[in-house]
Amino acid sequence: MVTTAMARAAGYRVFALTIDYNQRHRIELEAAARIATLLGAERHVVMPLDLTRFGGSALTDASIAVPKDGVEPGIPVTYVPARNTIFLSLALGWAEAVGAHDLVIGVNALDYSGYPDCRPTFISAFETMASAATRDGVEGQPFKVHTPLIDMTKADIVRAGLDLGLDLGLSWSCYDPRADGTPCGACDSCRLRAKGFAEAGAADGRLA
Amino acid sequence: MVTTAMARAAGYRVFALTIDYNQRHRIELEAAARIATLLGAERHVVMPLDLTRFGGSALTDASIAVPKDGVEPGIPVTYVPARNTIFLSLALGWAEAVGAHDLVIGVNALDYSGYPDCRPTFISAFETMASAATRDGVEGQPFKVHTPLIDMTKADIVRAGLDLGLDLGLSWSCYDPRADGTPCGACDSCRLRAKGFAEAGAADGRLA
Image (cartoon, rainbow over all chains, first blue to last red; front, top):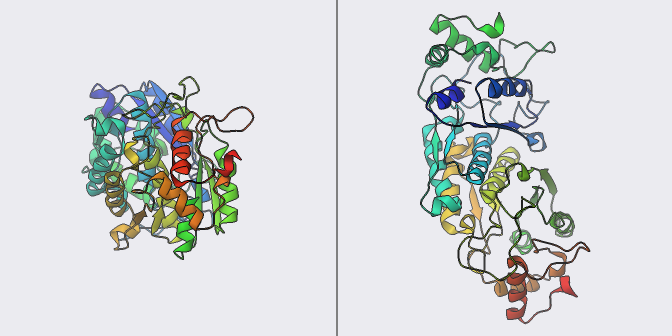
């Protein structure tokens, strides 16, 4: 949400892409639709891509539990193999189809779960690959992957969102929502979100 | 087909991945299923991914005609933006989920249509990116993208297939099949295939 608002504030037209990968927290798709409309996305494509056919993650295999005991060192089982590579590849394809060259993704490598595909090293390697992979790339119009949140703390992100006038309660973070559609409060994503609001001294509208 | 047979001949267990991207030549999905079974793939996933939602190619937008006047210099309108990046990203995700580190793709950069994502430069950049993107990559188990056909002529590929005892007539190439399920004979893919069989001095079982 903050990433999209930043892109709009910077003057970009927004073509929003959401992947319905049959994630455990599919409820986030509802938040994505609300946010795309609210922030004036020119188009919003929700692309079905059933990654449960591959599995290998607590988010795509119902038999692997989401950890609830706090953020641990190392890469947790909520890591979805190659997820951001897949997401950015789809964004790259859509961007080239519509003549765009700026991809924007809200990855964060500071207050995060240690996912390899959230780090600057990955983003840089993806950009290099994208320029070799595409018609526009080889014809001198490279693609830029913007990561405005990558070196911000979660508190910085909360503050940036509030400065942009956003109702952050419209966003969704939890990996393992309860049956009643409320966040679990114990997964890494809930913990990192709570840490951000607490350190920013702000209330989380989602929990109000 | 030749790529898969080569992988089998080299002793690999094969996990076959086919993308149903709502391509104009969806008939190739039937050939893929036949080939996966025939060549003893351990699993075959057909992943639906509707790239017509992005468009931008004669293969994913019914309003863009497939060229029929011969292979021209430059990148033709049958180029699907970032297609092989998307395909390899999905293969990467599945590979990491099942503990595989060898991806195999039948790209060819000699008798081909000039697609940027068939060239060694792209493959190499993808490998570098894959190692930065994944848990296994950062933990010292990099992924290798094998491209056994990349510097072969189409005639070399036909000969290699015959040497492996394959019925190449089971494979499919045409981008724009006729309503009766036969190849058009005039698109780039039909022309390159015919050139291969002619130069190898072999008959194309597909056309028998």
